Length: 120
Image (cartoon, rainbow, N blue to C red):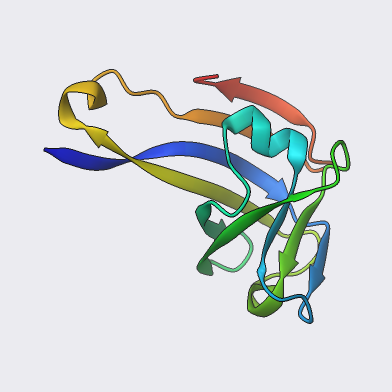
């Protein structure tokens, strides 16, 4: 049997920009993506801590070292600059491996600096 488990999480990321005219996706600083093992175009689920909206999209790399978190396309209507969001990806894992599974998690501060990490 296989089950879906949390693979990666970027917790409390601060939205730095929103562009409703972009084709879609969530721009994430490439350093953050690599740190938690997110790939370009990987499916993600996001929760906006400011307003409770949840949305699904895909990750695209933003400029390395920029600390950027950019709402693009339709999801730009679900948040604004300064909102804190949690970004999650999932993996299908064999039940036997699931017992020892550890997701890669980073926690960011208000300036999108990593203040905590685990499972990395």
